[in-house]
Length: 130
Ligand code: MN
Image (cartoon, rainbow, N blue to C red; front, top):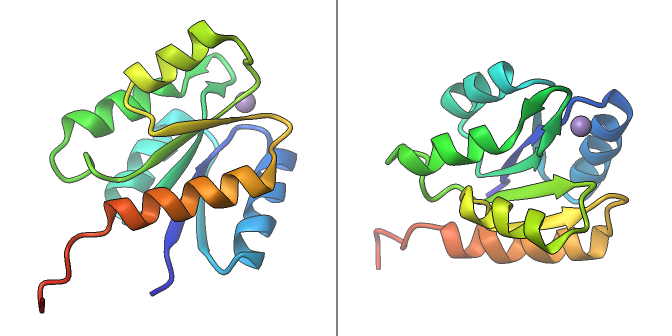
């Protein structure tokens, strides 16, 4: 099964870089450039995981994570924050908002690959045939 990843990122160059890398990794990619399109994409595109830039221009990307954690349908979808912040207090804020993990820019793709594999596996529902 091909997993579909939603990229939420306001910077076009970063968005393209992430999309290209995810496609090379074999993922299907959908993207949103702002918070409003991100909410719509979560509702309509059935992403299996979200890569969330927490600084979307003037908007706080963490609003998306908080909202997803309040919706039964989206609660278990992994959210990995992408951040320019290296401060521990910021990391705490991301986890409290409901993000599963975070990577700092510039992105270490080996770490991101590991997080995606890990969280996609954990979020997978039990096989109903078992
Ligand atoms: Mn940004």
